[in-house]
Length: 393
Ligand SMILES: Cc1ncc(COP(=O)(O)O)c(C=O)c1O
Image (cartoon, rainbow, N blue to C red; front, side, top):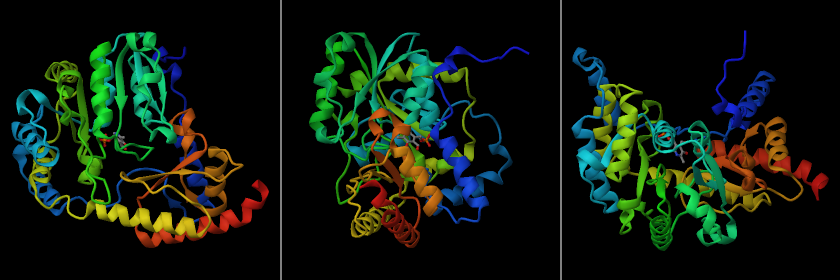
């Protein structure tokens, strides 16, 4: 039989995540009790109201039909949430679009707006779906390095004008994964000016909008004047409300772009299970659904950062998200460090180069375990560093 495989997949290799999973399974099979800090899947429960609404919904026989699109109450709840949390005014009917998670939405948006050969400015390191979405749409990636000396923001001035002229879309993600950084308002203002100058669509991924620590609030890209004319913002129920398995998210912003994506989606999916939509509405409307969430992650961050510092590994404190972006000790590659740590200490972290070539020299550590497990992880990492460090100094 011939190989049936679209050329769209040519740029898509088996990811490090698959290799990591194989290695984790092998360690578990050897009897190692692996502490998994590699994947950003929330371990916390959703707000109880979410489970109550879902419970009621699943026992109601009238809930099982196709929904085709988001229910109006969902769009209204998102608009009210955006006003309350970020001071952004949205028209529910045209400036909010429900998604089966922002992951689906990001892939589908690229397919809906890009033509083969279109150039997209993409963060490096960046969440892996950005590059995948561009490849699946037949587009080309122009990597924007996120460097520590620039606060992990892309340097728009360093993008050659010929590249900016050709670019159709720019993807940004603050607070970011894997690099936990925040974007100041002025940066978003410069993005709006840049997008207007070169006619570029801005796609801001705001999935970690509510996981921000130390009393700080993240800016929605849409809160900047002119942003609605040039961009859209993805958001998710997965992280703020611990509903990752429910597969519900949304995109807000420019009505024309949302209409294009809605047209695409109308050929792809038939909507989300009604009880999940109702549960999402309840979460968005709830005054206390977000209570304590950021503090929980901040406490985990402190346990890890302070523990690792005491073990001799100084890691930058992340201001937001569920990830530490940790520069690894001298002498290691990201890959060797992560895989050795897993094999020898039973702690799984993700090598930074899984997110792009500028992720080399870092690992991403997910704060997805309770403090007592993180303390155990710190102990194991300390022993690993003591045993292995002399070889690398
Ligand atoms: C930066 C970022 N964007 C989007 C997503 C996808 O989230 P979901 O599809 O669950 O809404 C994730 C998931 O980890 C993420 O880290």
